Length: 117
Image (cartoon, rainbow, N blue to C red; front, side, top):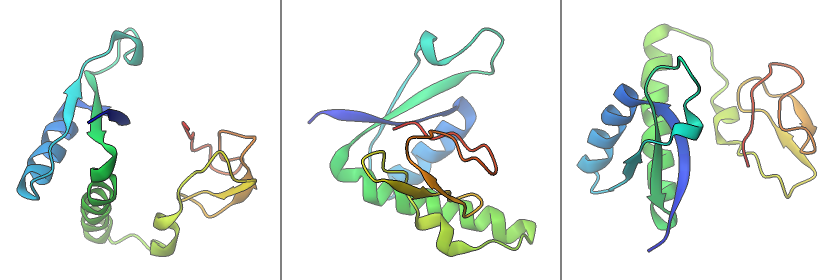
């Protein structure tokens, strides 16, 4: 089955994510790509997964993020975490700050979060 890129993260974070996904019998591939690592960056890797596994992966990541946020005692609007950037839609809602903006912009005009379609 064809795999697609789901993100670029630090190697240590990638290893933690892989362990959590393996517990759920979800298998992803970690790849190094010189083009996604600029000179002087920490070791970054790409995470590739089968499309059929994306909803389960998103659930694991969301669960892990909520554990971190809850431990930090931050006041988070959890409804924003469900927003996904769809470049085919006319507008998007930033999952970080809740700002609504045109998808012609690939960066939230309020907080600067960058979206890669």
